[in-house]
Length: 120
Image (cartoon, rainbow, N blue to C red; front, side, top):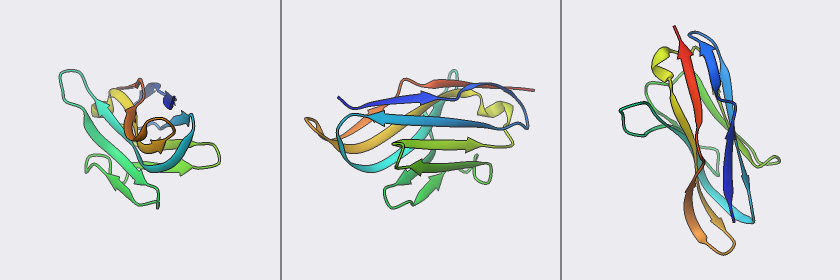
């Protein structure tokens, strides 16, 4: 069974930095794309950043220039470096992966989420 586990959330002051990590486990044949999404209270889940197997990245306009997504294939992780954090970045951040794995084939899975709170 393939799983995603996020870590690195917490409380940080506005202007600060934090890094989120997402590790996947299981028999994964191929990662098509991984990414981070977030959901603030009362709002819909929205894309933050994605990275393809080839390394192409995509960012929400609201985080461009502040957030950086990267993959560490040796550690089976995807990271989100967040700088110049704003109070509006407060949300639950979810890791997402589109991958091909044993027993399930090509599938899209989500992590449980990690809370980021940015204080003024």
